[in-house]
Image (cartoon, rainbow, N blue to C red; front, side):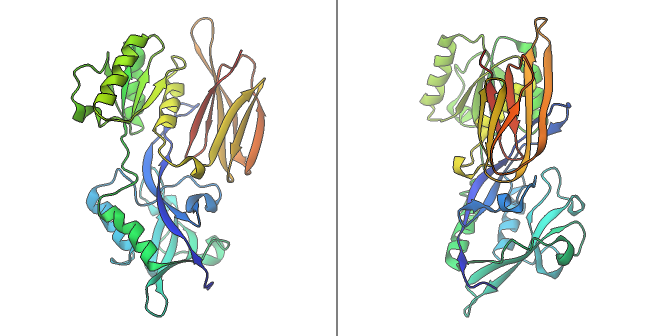
Length: 340
């Protein structure tokens, strides 16, 4: 086992929800990711759509139990002293697959923590020879740094506890109702209002974003911003690009992303001429979807790309008449309008 130390930290992360091109829904999850040697550990596991056990939408008692397990203050949940590091974002079933590892104490005084023998596990016992992540770890963490990071979660300083409610303001009530229903389906609270006048400050503090319809006058927008500023609340503001529910959901997902920009897989989406240029920092699945509204106000959707891309910049041709492009990885969403 390597005697070299790895750094350990925590950071807010997101499994991006959304309405996919085929009509399926993908659930939004906020969680705490493990930062090892300055990079999310999740990104070092190649293409993986998963979340850590430290998710913000689980009951506090279960969250605390997961933290105490990582601190070795509670028994390992799996055979052979193995702990779940990442699991299915849709359920907690091991049959869906999970990244597990052995967590040990190390050092003469037992102060250090070691994560080793990483594996992809779908049953009670891990097959290291067949399903082991042989290029990952072992990681040895200094005990003080490790306990301090996880201890802050027990003290209530939970990085993943984002505000997952959105205030929808616009003139097209039917569209807003469909958008609110889609957001609630993927796990994001949504309320519809004409403005924010008279809303108590404690309620405004529960919102993470405000989405404006295109017809909302500037006077109303200014009033909403003033209400949130008066309540001392910093929120993300979204200007709806078009009356397309999946596109608006993608814009809101992007606005709710609290993960540090330097720790995201998807870092850029631009449209140059008849092509989209996207950039990813690690190998991952990328979906590119083009939208447009035709002359009869019908939404046209074109799935441009759905494949695993290597780290770097990628240029993808777009279908003619595309008006908007959504790029999606498991953890991030970016939206770009196509210039005429």
